[in-house]
Image (tube, rainbow, N blue to C red; front, side):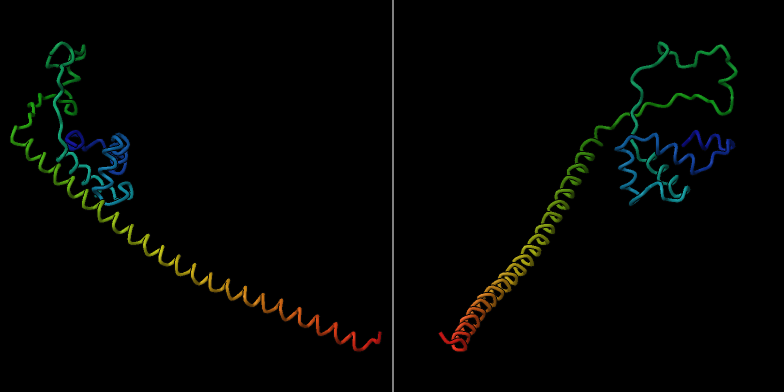
Length: 182
């Protein structure tokens, strides 16, 4: 972010910068950013997306480089020395950032609280899913009982039709016997 603020005259479009930064993020950072902004990050307007990126830049923890390139030399080695005097390329040693011992318990408490909150959310979700499943089971049982009743009705009606048809056949046969002398 500092480099962009130091070089605003390059004229990059904000949406292009947002796209470059987003494409360069790790998948876990993308997921964090999506969660933080409440949905599809890339559908935000460029200024709002840039504000989210600035916020992530502010709150992200960084760790200093453990090793020094070039044998520990704190200045660049270039045959063109004046290239480093260009206003867009400045180098300034950054102070080392160490985590204070008092921060570790605070972070542990935050982590414990996050685990407790996540556990509560998962328990609520599971309970809600169980109630939905129970409602479906009750509805399925109700429909099953209705279908059993209808099948019984159909079975009785089928039996009645069989009985009626056999009686009609018998009556017809008796009538025909009466009509034809033997």
